[in-house]
Image (tube, rainbow, N blue to C red; front, side, top):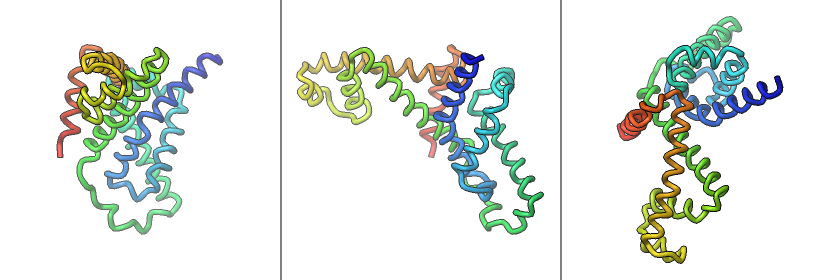
Amino acid sequence: MADSDHGRARINRHVMEMYAWPLTVYFRGTRDRWLGEPEEIVQGFLADRLDRPAFFSDWQNSGLRLRRWLMNAFCFYLAEQKRKQRRDGQSESLPEDAATDDGDPHSEMDRAFIVSVVRQALRDTQRICSEKGLDDHMQIFVRRYYDGQPYQSIASDFGVAPPRAAVMARSAARNFKAALRDLLSCDGAASEEIDAEIESLLETASDE
């Protein structure tokens, strides 16, 4: 039982780390943002749903990506909160922007999800590289792929030749891609769908 509780706590922590911010972005783009502070609403939702024993088994049976399952569950939660406020007499006077809906909250959540995934993949890659004694590889990877610096200048700072710096960056890049694939797998993408999932998310991120 203790192992089961520990495993569930780990899963819940992962969900909160990965999806709280995308859900907050989604909430800010909906017509229901008058309900309260975004962070408080999202935390209340996660505390309520993640405590339900069948929440994840129901998700697995749904065939949906986890972010879509959470978004659908979040919509139900918002409806519950509106009914609660009506019962409590707290929704007689709504702010003017309660009837507006700016942009596409679904796409905004996808964009936020991309950022959340990349951030977590970078943290995972940093941890993996550190455990393997490859901290320099990680630094070179970030400077090359994130900062866009040429290998010539990077190599001189690390006392290696440019071809060696490229090899080191590619080593960290492989760990990064593996971390990215693991995170998308946790979201519910099958192994043969992950490449298409990455392409789809990147297309969403590039839309104006």
